[in-house]
Structure formats: structure tokens, C-alpha cells
Length: 168
Image (cartoon, rainbow, N blue to C red; front, side, top):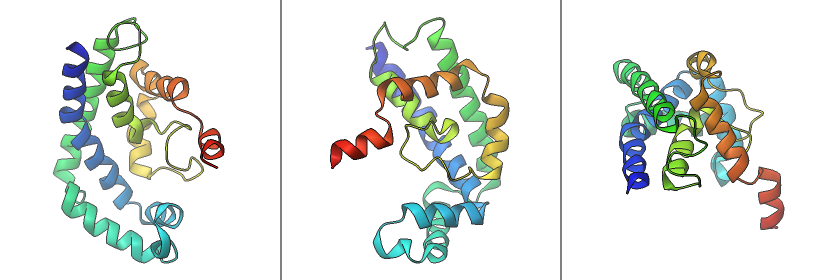
């Protein structure tokens, strides 16, 4: 029950806000957004990265309020509150509930992904983060919760190379 309660907390109290903040910051860094579209957009859109990025900025602006500065500030506060909660719940433990990986760990780590961007994540690691997101991230890198997310990805997710080889 505790794992499900924590899963719900991170899904509701972190998820919408981390998405809003990531899209807000990426939308404000047109060069990085275009580069991401060049690498990640499907099929024909990848051949038109500027158009894909422009479309994505409009879509994320509507879907995630990614053009709203006031909401971005609120999102930063919510992300920090969720990071505080993560660290509080972890205490001295390796996992959020008990001594094994649960849905709570999966949810928290995956939703913090845009903040931490560990190598084992789904996006290319050779694309720089949006400048605003990097400024937000920089003072958090030494925090236990930030490091925990990176460790959870390292421990429980196959590296991209291994996953690609397994799929082939």
C-alpha cells in the first residue's frame, strides 16, 4: 500500500510539473529544441527539424502550458518539493519502500528523468540540456535525491547500447 501511495504522490505532484518545466525550458532554447527534433522526431519530421520544433513548441505550449512563465516558476517549486519528499522518504534506505525496487521507485526515478538525464535514459546524452534547465539542475546535482535517481537508472535500466543490441 505504501508503494502505491508514493507512486500516486509522484505521479500527481511531480509528473505534471516536471513535464511543464522541461517543455518550458526546452521551448525557450530554440537551438536545442531543433537539435532534439532532428534526432528524435519520427520519419519525415526529422528531415524538417525547424518545422518539427516549431510545431512541438506550439503543441507543448497548449498541452503543458509550456509558454507560461508563472506556471514554470510554480513547477520549479513543485519539483523541489518532490525532491525534498523523495529524500525524506528515502532516509538512509536504497529504495523508497522496503529493500527492493517497487512501483514507487520506478515512478519517482522515471519522473525525475528530465531533471537528472542519466545516461541510461531514452534521450541522446550528447545533446546539451536547455540552458534554463541546466541552471535549475546545477545546484541540485549534489543532493541525495538527484544522485539516487541516477543510481536507480544505472542499477535498473539497461544501457541504450545493450537495449539496442537485444532488440536487433
